[in-house]
Length: 364
Image (cartoon, rainbow, N blue to C red):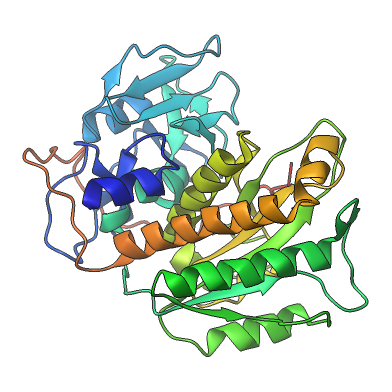
């Protein structure tokens, strides 16, 4: 059963969650990458700590020398997972799923490739070891938010408005999750408008919940496929740390599960997992993701989204992802391994210096 759930989590392609890189721990223990006490940085770029890819390879007990289709990229892997870094500063993939880094990849004076501590804590470790997430709790409620509605129709497709398409997917997803034994609630049940604050207020009354906001994308005609976003844990220069930052690692694990499942259903990789500063996600007190089901501006995506059968297929994929996330979010879920890796470095005192203002991320 555990192996089957792992396959579901990885979109039927890999088994990252069960890779032997994980260290044994008692249920509820927080992994070194997610503890408040920082580990000694391999390098400091300004005030931003970075770790070398070699340290990550050693920590997760991966191998070097894996083949990569991108010239100049560095890959570390085992039989279950492959992480690729580079060749550009914004290239990071985990088992073929593109991850948009919070900070650019850099090289030190020796030429070693470095990844930011933020990306390790908020992206890589939650995906590699979902049962080591801090604050794991049983998922009691799934909040499904159909975007737009009422006078706000969203983008138009040959299959109708975005508001109508995502509501149909939301209703089917609610049905699928209910059949899977999860309680699922819709923020809207008809064609009417809700503000972001109304959606947040409706969701935040539920304890032990997760939140999925469904949308249809638009851009240039060549872009296609699903993509999933989390609220960036890095605040904008003018704001304090967002309330959603505490849930960012769990949101990342949920986003990765959703992207794997949707990509498998769509038959196209899509744009992967990204981060954004959308206000809707900022005030939620639960793991939350923004799901783009495809591009209305792409002829292939638009034709698929016009199909009721395809919309049902997307809902089924999201239901698999949510069920898998709920499995790994449970405090009782554990990884069974034998040889825990040693710490990558000695802990140091926590710095009181505030982090520098992050770059404003943009949605690709």
